[in-house]
Length: 203
Image (cartoon, rainbow, N blue to C red; front, side, top):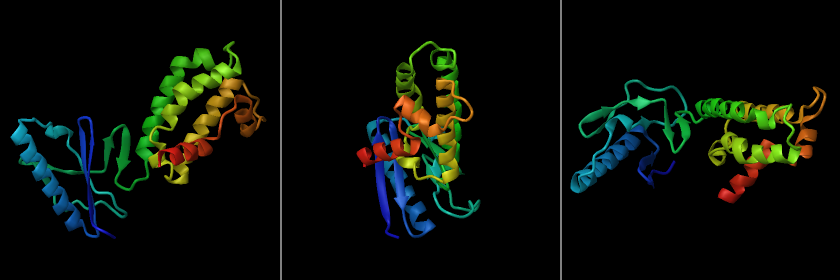
């Protein structure tokens, strides 16, 4: 495994990513990065909210409680099991279980708001319901899927079930109607194919 350090900046979100063959290298590299940020902040009189600073060790196996902590502006940073960055929840084993659960709650909350427009009793034509799904609901389901799309099949299956469920509601489909027929009627791609397409474009 090659040693590597990457600094990521987006608006006021900053991330230091260290990749190495040993835990000691990763912690030492991250600590050096934090020290450089401290120097820059003091030079330009920038205040940092330490409470929003998180550290996560991504790796297989169990989380070690005796792992050396990082320090930032004389505050000790504990090792968390997950962190939210730009709306994507990254857990220490990269299963993305927490992210899918978060998106599930967000998805059904939005469905509750627009159900009068896309529900079984809505008079809207299917093409209009399909457009609402594409513009409002699908972006929630697939947010950052270029990253988590390779997650465990059990997590991806949950997203597939959510799309199939809402399509059945939109079309008022009978129990025996196949899901692929619903996708054809609404002119929608399966969730797997859609994620593959946007991932190709992204990468």
